[in-house]
Length: 251
Image (cartoon, rainbow, N blue to C red; front, side):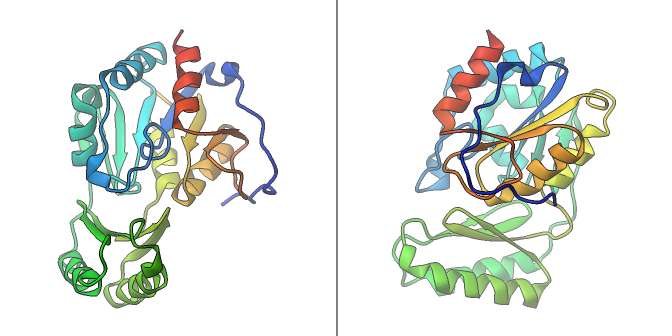
């Protein structure tokens, strides 16, 4: 990964950034606000329409790269999901132009989910989210459980040879060998994106590998949210500002 910049304020991205570019977007915390419960997130028709117009404007070079599974993204985004490149489960699965690729789901994820449920049974607010290629333990509504959650994840990850993915008030065990940076690099090899400038917009620590991959390919990262050490070059304060910036480009 590229060296992280100092945690000092970053400039806002210029609207010229997407000239001859490929646009990569995180989902939660970037296009929509992070919700207390991951299943309570919705996508309004206005956002879906914006993504559709951006895809047409950029010649189809728009991708959603998310920790959510492609199945979850399909449900949330609706028909527009079929017009975008999708990479789900932190780069484990991909779909574009109707062609899909994904690993075999480890049976050990069932054991991981069961162990997480046992650990969280007496912790009000703990949420276990089973995904296609991972299991996430959310403690946003139970912040006192953070230390126990992280220790549990490290133990289960080592026991089952799964990758431990840290995020905002959550930790996930997932299929190893991929991340969002791998997803960006993979898509940039496709003929439609090769030779263009990758721009990745994301908010979480899970997005740092994608910022680094975009920079390594001559592009830029845009950090959403509070200033921190990051491989991004620009920043926007929140998802509302992301949508506003994208509308300016769309217009």
